[in-house]
Amino acid sequence: MRRATVAATLALSAAVVLAGCSSGEPEIVLSQVAGSTGTPVPTETVTVTEIDTRTVTATTTVVTTATVVATPTVTVTALPRPSLTTSTVFNRPAALADYSNLVVDVRLLDRMSLSGNAAALQLDLMAQHLERLGANGPPPGLDAPSYYGRLASLGLFARAASDEATAGSPVAQSRYAVIRQETGILLSVVNGALTTTFTLPTPAPRPTTTTP
Image 1 (cartoon, rainbow, N blue to C red):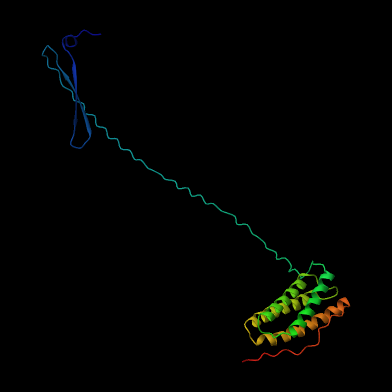
Image 2 (image 1 turned 180 degrees about the horizontal axis):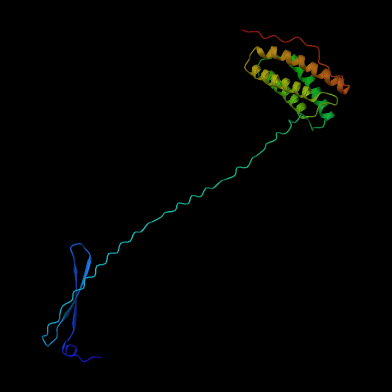
């Protein structure tokens, strides 16, 4: 190290002055001041100007996710239309009893005035006998749909005639005439299938109702 008079006698002191300029740029001033000897030391001013310009570009990536739902294809195959079948076995004793009941029903109704509760109850009982025959199997050799259709029609007519007799309607008598005729045809068909001899009685004179 050199021993110079300036280095020995001067006390260096540095002051850093930071002042903002009018343009907003930072300015650094370095000053060197003399020590105790009073020897003037030239002042050096260093101005450091730093401009930092950064451009930030933001990139946004949009990811679209599409969900594809596969719709299954359903093939419907129509089943063949079932044909009318019956699994009811023909009960001969029960059927014979109800055929006999139909003969009795007709015999009693022939002797009644078809107006009032008595005739209504007998017609309702006849409808029950027809319903029991419909719950039984068809006689062997007979066409089941035709047989059951005849029983169902006779049952509907007997129920309707019962309501008309209760109401005192004269329609009950004309409806019963149809019931009697169709019952004779039914028994005739049954006789051919079962070799039976069911017959309806000869129509009796119907009592007349006099209106006071």
